[in-house]
Length: 280
Image (cartoon, rainbow, N blue to C red; front, side, top):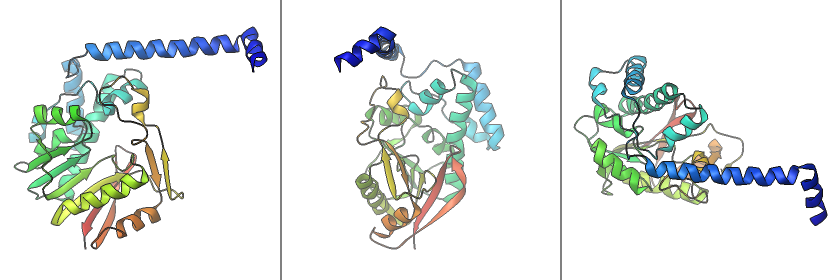
């Protein structure tokens, strides 16, 4: 082993490897220091925000009332921060995708269950979708649940959401939640959410396209590249999940009661399938 390392050092491989490792740590340290200096709401230039917002409203042909939805984005929102990193700082592209994904999902929920009194945004994060729920469901009570305390606090403070009271609800949206849960949590969470629905309630969740492999959990997500963010979830309990439709059907049939599901032709964020689950 020492001989191998000596040879690597002589030809520069070992030295370069060590320098790259040190550079990675220094970048991570700078990212953490930068994160600490950021205000809770990202100070995005207003002209960029307004242009992206206008593009979202016009592209989806949304009612004028939707334009009053809150625009604030939390400094630790990985749904914004990761694409911003990937797209190399193309702020307009990232903002348009971020707002567009959230607005389209809320619009889709309204079309699936237009008349509801209580909504739970489960795993709602920092409000990519939640910010639009008051426009989609005026007068409905909007609850939010998320393993990140800072995310729940942000939606309550800025979007008028209420902390989950664990009571029955008419509509649950679990966007990009089951795409991250280990198998036991996947099954347990589905059972728990279906148990929260009123008699005529609806659960809308999203999954990656069904695969031939029954269930696969990979311990990495967009948060793996953003360790400086607050309330980052452990990769042991929050990874990337792919499953087969037979696994999904078997899991659904194991829940007490009789349940049916439909798959919408549209895609959440352009990639994940919407599954609409109801009793019957």
